[in-house]
Length: 380
Image: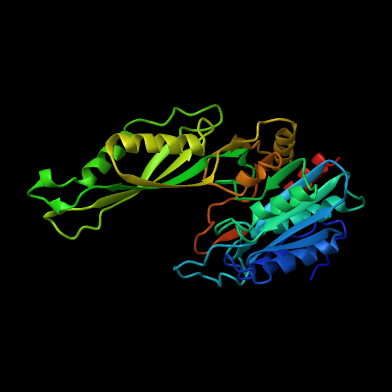
């Protein structure tokens, strides 16, 4: 066996395998945070374990000065799924140069790559500034006892980074494709319209809530919410369910229910969209219930020196100038933006949440090199 050169880059693969072998299906931790804490302690980080409810979280920092660069991520993963894996979902096996396991690209692989990127950055010198990690075990779950609670703790303890990189798998096809500098907001609504149950042959004696609900939904879907903005595509409203639960063909029901989701850009807020939904519903229904949950507001990190530095470091390492993008679903960046500027960059996400989630070993090593280049640029 060849002995690695003392000047060879640190290899993220062993740490990634150790993390993958922890079956940390949210909200379980299964030892994943301890594996990471031990790796960071060996590099000189001060590690603070933060448990909120049943969720294990971790904050670690190296250095006390500015600039302060934070890396955020999560060790929890989604379940293995119903399909048959060609290798164990928590075995962390390598086959034909590819590392398999639940969380390989979303996002234990990126966490391992950042740790070894830090290790390479530290060779020969202490950081000119500070490096920290915010790692939660609650990103794939309700996200109530994870990043949000750690951010509160950070704010209370004066731990406010100058910039944060979230290691989500942002790239659709190749490493270096995309940096996410914002995300759309997400609103879920359940609208229940109430009427008066009656015989279908005598509609004048009833008040059919289905007819009222259809008119509400027709108005909501008749026109676009907007035409998009400088950095965002147009907002979208999608009906996700329409339910009556009526087994009888000759009875009009007492209530009818619909569910919808709005993915919205920076032209709206959750509050403004909630008001719009209530206004439209009230035009067509005398009695209704509207239950709204907002999982995140839209946000944008305006391009500037920090985003440009990240973009430049990635371009220098890959030969690809990444596109700045705001597409996709939500991530914990929606919370971090309240504390400091944030952008997202990680692995290729083609297999995230799928059976046989995987990442090529060389891609994982390349990401470690990119993170090292980013740190070298930020902390020069």
